[in-house]
Image (tube, rainbow, N blue to C red):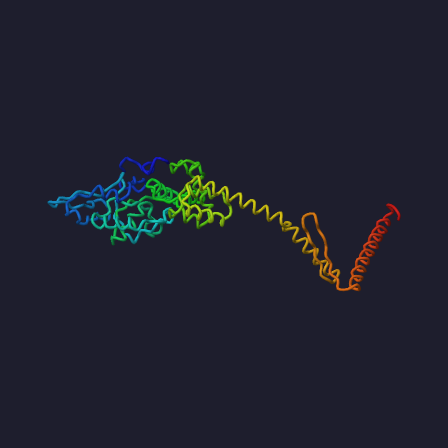
Length: 369
């Protein structure tokens, strides 16, 4: 791939029967085609006639003065018949990588279509079991045609797999630079995860370097709020890329807010991230030095609870680095003697248990006590 949409499609003419197995050449935007076809005469505002459903007789026309007419939509493109397909039979592309559309640009395209018709066919694929068609390329023309109230739209029908449909939709948007960074990254991830492509194969097919694809997909590690900033243009690629190294989502958001507020350059964003990283590391080290680890805390708490049960009074274990102590509360001299007796009794029991263990061991005639 990597040679544009034209590389997907044949150049030789085919019969109508064979045309269903070949790929169409996709053009640039419909709006650009509309501009090239416009003439200064007021009579041009008359709406073009749609071609017949089979696409084999006649074509859409633009009226010019003296009632002369010229063909706008060809009967065939690269041997594939152009058909007029009802809009209600066409579903949106489930793999469409683009999710944000400029409403004002769509409105302009709608007005152009109202006056001149759809000058460039969209690309669709037929769905199984008579479920209609799915859009592959030409999302803006499709949406604007619905806004214009058209009942049918000129289309090229191709038998395409899910992978091919996704690939064509992505390439069309990449060539026209219609995708924001997050949409592009998600499209790459979709092709890699759902269709078994390697990054090397994907890079070749879409005409991008492997490092470009890797860097774009790293943006998906950003917090959802930061991704939205990048998608809507609040953050540039240069400003957002350094944030990927911050693993904490809250820290990413903090950095993004500072970058936007100060209108930082890409270099300034990198320096800010380094400072925030250093601050986070110093904070973590300070917390670790202030108190024992989580495992040590659990052990000390369990030991404290056991001592409370044994002595029947409040017991506290203090741990401060190498200085550790046990505090045992007593209410009177009598209470203190009780605690001491408990300690001595415990010691005596431990000695007796040790002697019993030794006697049992000596019964094996290994040695005598």
